[in-house]
Structures are given as structure tokens and as C-alpha cells.
Length: 292
Image (cartoon, rainbow, N blue to C red; front, top):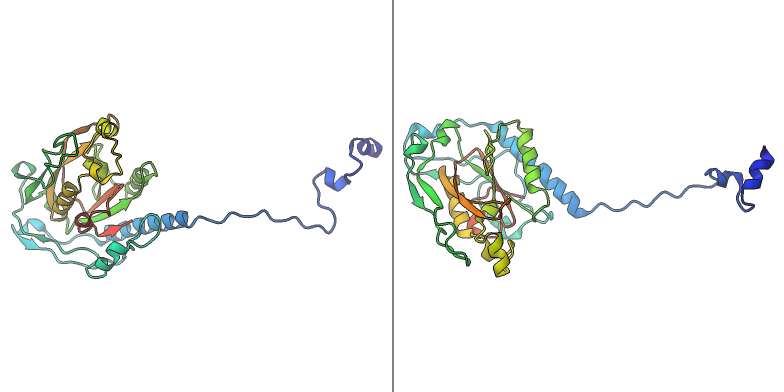
């Protein structure tokens, strides 16, 4: 049998080479390991920091009753965990880091309006930026903010809405990641366009597009273009939510590419705004407590 095996083995190969064995005294070279991308590491760190910060706020609880008086001032409490203001690429956002060091982690908010007893009791004022026209007319003409503090503030015993800004490119997994964050807390989330749970509301900033899909095609303006986003309206409505007011927010329909009628959004304990440019406009940044 040894003779048969040797006949089928090339003369230049030893038996150990033929059967994949190492020659005596030889050492197999370890495969070269590709270096881990610093961008990937920074993204993971930012995601972990965000989840940790959300858990910290969830554990804090709320003790104040906003319906106790028609006007009250909310005090600023320094959170036990401070998430760094980081971009998704892992670099500290220099344009806001200086401002962050000069103010509390969570912004002080004055509730200087009467508290509505029900949603039907809310009255509405036209939001700033409702008349912005990028070539399709005033598509956000029905956008509004409430004159009163939302009754949800008292119903949920919200001490202060805390707003997170999450920036990343289209299709990179922002919405998927945030759905999993909601699932971590085990809260029931509405099936409305803007998912709202007992603790967290997640707003997609695509809703502030000034052009629908056809309009962007006709004008050659992409969704990344500043002109394709209504930052004035975005800033006014985030400020209103921060003040405990309700908003009537536009909807960008990703299925049809159209701009749909407005929807009513109330404050929540935590509000996450995710999109292409949450940290581009200084007035929008003023309402963000944490950025990722």
C-alpha cells in the first residue's frame, strides 16, 4: 500500500506536504490581521455612549408636576453621565464644544406659558419658516407650534424634555439602530409616522425637506443640499418641544417621495432627532443637549 501511495504523490512532495502537515521544525506564519478602522471604533463608542446616556436618564425619573401652576421655571440638573459631543466619525465637534463647556449638560428651560388641560384645548401659532420656498411653493405652510404647554407634560410627569441629535448619511442604519434602542427600554411605540413611546420620541429630520422627490429631480438639488432643508422651521419646532409645547410637524413620505400633511407631536422625556444635518444650523444646535 505504501508503494501505491507513493506512485500518486509527485516526486517533489514529501508525505507531510501531501497531507497538509508541517515539516518537522517548521513554524506556520500567522495570517496578517487587518487593522480595525478607527471610524468603525468611534462609531461603536458613540453608539454605546448614547445607549448609556439614555439609560442614565431613564433611571433618573421625574419628580416635578408641571400642571401645578400656569407658569413655572424648570431648574437645570447636571446628568450623572455626560455624553461627549462627537460626530459619527469620532471627532469632537469643535463648533459646539466651546458652547457645551459654558452651559449645563441639560439646558435650563422656562415654562412661561399656561398649561393646556387637554389636546383639544391647545391653540396654535404659525411656526417660523412656514413660508420657506425652495422652488415648490410653501410646502410647510401648515406647520405650527402650540401657544400652551402640552398636557402630555403633566400626563407623563415630564420634568424636562432632553433632546439628542444623531447625524449620519442616508442608509447607514440610523433608524434601525434607534428602533433597537427603543426596544431596549421595552416601551410600546406608536405605529405613526413619528414613532413615540412611553419614554422616547424619534423624529426623522427628512420631514423638514423643502422639496419632494420629484422636486429634487427637477431642480437637481439633492437632499444633502442646505436649500433642501428647512432649518428655520426645524429650529423653531425643536425649541417649542424643548419648552414643553406641542408642534404640528410636516411629514416626508419615504414610500411615495411626497410631502404629506402635518402631524401633531408632543414633548417626551427623551426626544431623538436623526438625519443628515442635525448639527449644521446654530439655532438647531441650541436645542440639542447631546450630539452623536
